[in-house]
Length: 388
Image 1 (cartoon, rainbow, N blue to C red):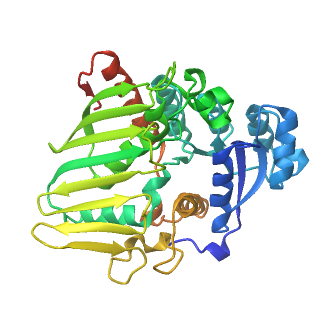
Image 2: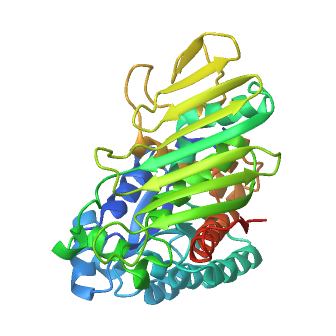
């Protein structure tokens, strides 16, 4: 890597959202500190000032740098000599656009949860603002940072699978198989509310992960989709299950299934890609292994951290082979790659190419176009929609 971790001061990090009772905020904080590249120094952790202050105290933010609003934080931190350099947004979807816009206008780099915004129009506006600002804008499609996912991408780029024919990706869960939102469960309540989640339910929450992974690993772009969206539980206003067909720019065909009502599934993200020379199969619940099968050959199980595979994704491997690495480590790799990019900018140096794999504003916009076209396809009677 081009930047020396031990020689670089920690980047000053802020956070919007992610206060008490939030799942993803703590994930961001763990990821940011795992490799020692960031220091969390400021936050607007809740829209409730009292809760924001209590949350800040819990995570070690000084009271004078705990803010009641992200607007206040962006302006105050931009005016400080020791103000935050980058800020993570860990709020419900409807706040991504205004929070990110406030940060960009204040000259602060952005790390944003997916999906990028609540609407495609907001995403397009934000992309224009981010591009014109020249600031780094990262979107946390963290599954792309698993070592074996990056190895799969590398194998395909090297032509080991030949011409890609079929891309199958699925992401089933079962945590919304009942009316959990009626029990005032915070995570379920906002994810099933169009005013906070946007137009996509399951497709916004996890379908975008599957879609990004399909394009990231295959190196292809989906040009068309046909979607059948369902809301199986109660009077739910957003989809909780989605089946889609995909067409790719090289002529390959694909399918995408995302569900939060798939009884018996916890977090079963899986991708299978088949070419005319070989096929691969990777599962998030068994992330240290990648199945590779050449046409007419035996299945090979490639193991993370082993000496038998190329070393290209090895920098994101922290433990010896046989020790489990997963969700938190992949999230931390995203943060470490962001730190590498920011330090390269500060030092006017070339950036390690591996660090440039971090999903950016274009990926976030792509995810919002995916949601928009899926909703349109379903509303119009399951007809094909153009993505490109």
